Image (tube, rainbow, N blue to C red; front, side, top):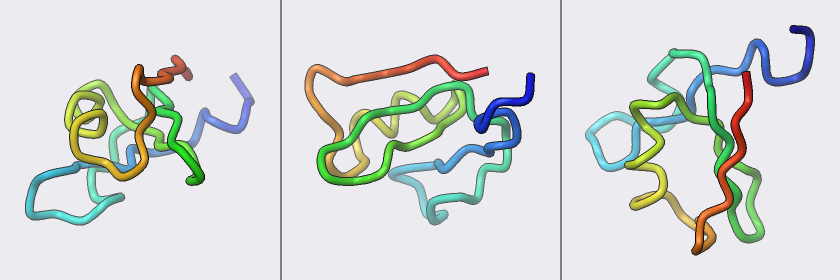
Length: 66
C-alpha cells in the first residue's frame, strides 16, 4: 500500500506521562477533531485518544487506515 498513511506512526499515548508521538507503533485509526488535524493512533491508544485528546468530536469520527 502506498497511500499517505502507510508510514504514519501513532500519535499517542494520551493521559499518560509521555507526550504525543512517543508510541512508534503504526497508526491504524484516524480520529476526527474539531478545528484540529486528525489524530492517527494505534489500536492501543484509540480509546485514550477518544477520552482525553483535545477537540475530539462526539459521536467520534473514526476512520480505519491501513
